Image (cartoon, rainbow, N blue to C red):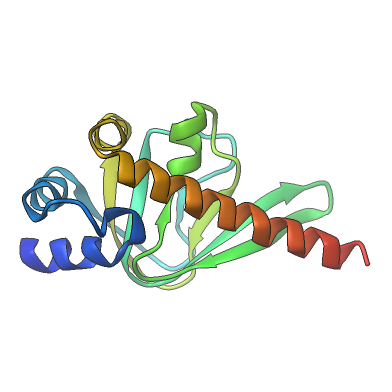
Length: 147
């Protein structure tokens, strides 16, 4: 994948859509392209939140550790971002994210991610919207499981 194709992938992520192309190029350049094999975790619940990831290709599962074993709560795919919650809350990872198939992702360091939020208020709003949507979906799933 070339730098330009990574910029195009980042532009598909809602929170990056309105960011200046030169900034996206810098983000793509400073981000680290990482590969995960099927079954390999990006991170585990309880790990330090040191980066966010944009999935460029592949799918991942989000699971929570529960007393009765892992509970799958979400599936992620191309152009999804994950890991930003721990960065924003400055807390350990709240879930485990594991590659369901081979994945190529862009790893965005915590410091770079926070700097983007500071420089681009529209990105902060997009992050809040995405987190609100996830909370809504989680609440709906919990309500269904308690029915």
